[in-house]
Length: 132
Image (tube, rainbow, N blue to C red; front, side, top):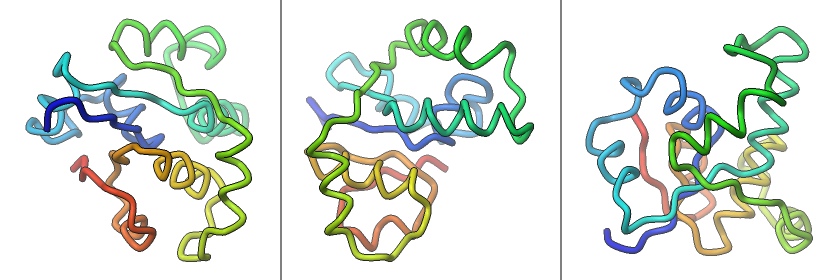
């Protein structure tokens, strides 16, 4: 799996930053390899901020102060959301209703392997790496 591009589902971002033992050791090894690009989408930042603001997520600090430095320390790149990504969502079948996951799938269609525990995302035909 050399030279891979791995896009982390939001729960995997949180696991890697807060509870890395929840990610399978073999997956952690893949993601730690310097041969790969590992990224968290801005959609995950958006989801994390929303969940913290409504009290469904506890973090060590405010998301806007904690997340970017935590990603940098972990060697996880930040992936912006582009117009091609958001417009690609229109053509996705409705296998999944979660808007965050649908945008992650659209971004993964741009040449990324999606790292997730969500088996339902396999229906979209994007490459998946199962995190747990």
